[in-house]
Length: 84
Image (cartoon, rainbow, N blue to C red; front, top):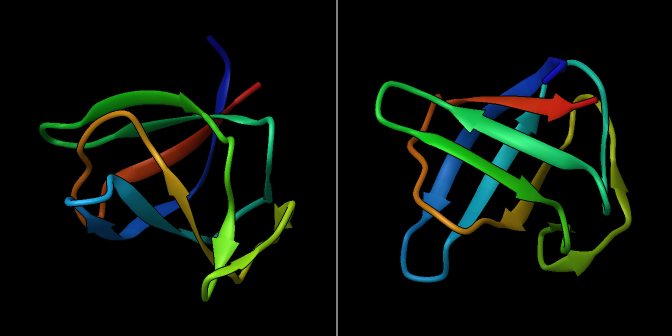
């Protein structure tokens, strides 16, 4: 599975399973598949929702932080990869 690192987890809302990703390299769009990997985290998920400050968007670019729902848990500073 080819992957490129696009950012890191800035915050995780455990009650609603939403992760905020700070994009440091590359972009993220609805339909992309992401892999979140950390010390105790290993989650792969297709991006079905994407929001910035509660506004729905279809694409986030480098320098932005966007939230998306994931089917698992994540921790701050986990690395986020886009699956190619």
